[in-house]
Image (cartoon, rainbow, N blue to C red; front, side, top):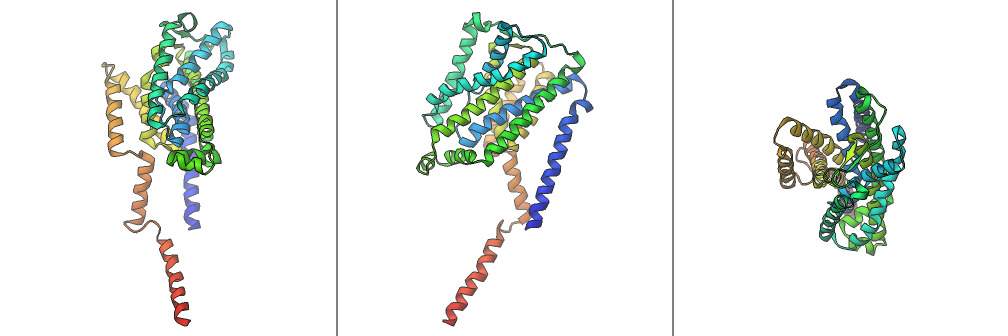
Length: 350
């Protein structure tokens, strides 16, 4: 048994090392700006989906308003850079502001929305999303209205622009994955999963459900706001339809469910598959809605045929192949048999 566990750990460490090496060398091997663009967007969504999963995947409260924090973080960085006359690479110092704005919005938002049950929470997040989108349109003196806000000029050459942003996005993704893994293994993560399984029972066991949910919601919003700022600096402009995009929420939820909601690797895998595929479809077909149609069809297929996602489903298939139809835990039955035999022998002796 110990040998099997050791081999599994070695295999996981080797796979992680290979993935890390591939991630670091990707822009060096595929140096084309068009290709590295795929990598930048994929890593931005890895960060956003992992942040969404820390709250929604662990707690069971599905948020369809994550674009509120993403767009607010982008606008916060852009407006601060414009009004405070920040230019050049110094603008990256404003990214923590995007995180702070995301968290600041999440606290009052969560204090209201998290008092209701899961289905009502989904409706409230959608309503708040449209409120923020309308505010971005109508507060034109602050947000620029339909024109939006432009990013400061970065003194990077065209050949290195995407590569630099790739490594910035990679750093954000790695930090978020480490945070997600730490949360899952902590007492905080255990409390979130207890809320997901049975919130009333969790309260009865002493879990301060509102406090735990609000902390996870604020953490998710802060990271989403920060990566929204990275996205804004990369795209160089934010407008209401792009900053507060309903397809962003649909994409994030689909990526998480596609890979395996509530897991660590599932949302990462979903983002790495779906976002590049969506970009490819958008660039290949002249019909601007083909990627949205494919996105909706894929979401329906995942919900119907693979509701647990790729990672959990693949794990079940591997277990079945290893056991080949035998019980997955034969050792428990084998251990119980000698105990029963011993009790029977003791009874005969008596």
